Length: 80
Image: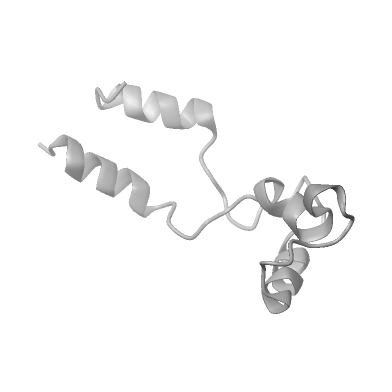
């Protein structure tokens, strides 16, 4: 079997570099209530992310695990 470190590595490997639009949407269009993008993000990246998140809070750039799925997965391997 796998030890705890190997299991975490295997589970995490599938999510590296993925993000849901909902987690970045405010930074793309209304950072801290300014109605402007986050000035620390590259304008090119903002443009690309806006295109990926066209449907605002409904579209994700990549499929992701929900918290319920994550908890069930971790529970199943005895990590909770």
